[in-house]
Length: 374
View: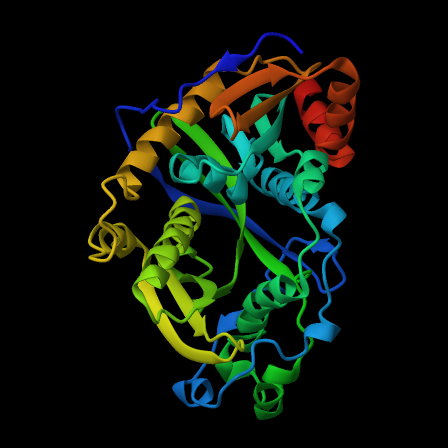
């Protein structure tokens, strides 16, 4: 590799001005893992208080869980297909310095308060944009096989999403469908994704991110982001230390929602037996104040969302300024958790060639090359 370009972890931007996210496109991934440019996988929130009181088991159906192929996690197929569809429809090329997934930007935004987890993102420059994708091989190599208990905990989150949503607005759903909702097979293959244009400072960003459901309806003639809802689960808070653990979860949830422009979060709190006990709503713009005013946490280095945004502004600017605009090479952004260093490196030619040939879809590349040559 060539010499590293380093960004000090104490770097902070002068501004935290985030461009208001606006949806430009959306797409669905079906139960069978196919991508379609429509809202067919969008869910609608429906979880009456009377249902919550029935001791819903968030572990039920675990053995029938339909899991999406992990080897395909992070692929750009649906995202790039929807961007191409947007450009064809609107006869204009999207304007962005960076195009990536919301999860990538969440990890960058929350890094100052999550220094224990390493990061490895591959970066490709193509036709005016930097495309950033997590290095799947390195991520997989670091992961350990989840225990059965951990797998069930992860499943409980998907189960909560399943029982709290309907496939259509309530007025269009039959009584039979509602009655069977708790028994349907849970799948993390089926999902709806929003693509938004946003940015921080002078840097323009397009991110795609999964949306769990809408609170009421998705308007066709205005920005739908205020109608979207993030669904989460967590352990019931029964003692002070649980509050601090939840605070870290809430911080990550805030980052996820803030980046995509989602304004409401609904948390399902489960006990140790995965029984749903309570459901609470949070307004995303109030979460930084909740974290700041948590009376249980007396740590002087407690989480500060504004500080995280200043780091985010600095790191985004650094990436845009330092990744060479060279379509023949691929690069890697890495955070080394042992040495606490954040670096950019050019990838060796063999690795670079593989990243260049696999990150972007041929369909998208051909589309852009065709438009470039017109």
